[in-house]
Image 1 (cartoon, rainbow, N blue to C red):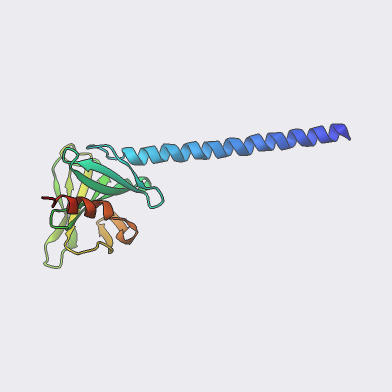
Image 2: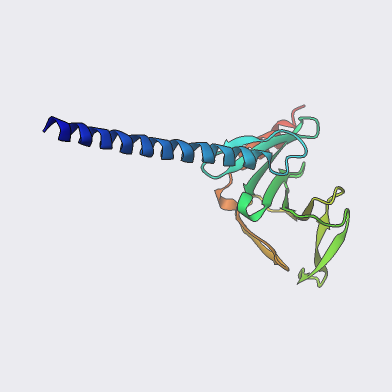
Amino acid sequence: MVKGLLVLFGLAAIFGVIVLGASLFEYYDRQQEKGAELNFLAFEGEWSWLDHKQFIQVSKYNRGTRTRLRRVVLDKGRAVYVRMGDDYTYATTVLFEETCPPLAVISTTKQFSDGTYKTLTCSANGDYLSHSAVWNIPDLTLNWKEDLDGYSWNEYFRSWNFDVLKRERTLAKAI
């Protein structure tokens, strides 16, 4: 009887160690992924988490005087950035990690309403493609969805909190 209890206790301990090990590995793996998200295409400034649950990151640029936000989707190799202009417009950019001819401008088959073709622009180093849009609306709550010949994204801005950008623009008006 005692021997049976010791075996049962031993099996329970082994099971507990396995479960604990798997949990720690999953936690470590997620922490590594979060670090990779913060370092993804982080060529200017240091990124930190603004909202972990929504995966929104924040960073300063322009010598620390301006704020920008972004959401990284590692498995798609893409990041969507948002800045606010002095006139409260939202400047949005999507970046795709992609090797491309430096400074190349690529016309896609997609067109704007005026008939001009939408473009993707390669970075100076040839390590990513970008596409930008400016939104002159009071609150950016739209769904920015595009497919530019295989480079696609679907960013739902309603889940983003832009208060940090709005406050920064308001404080910049101080006399």
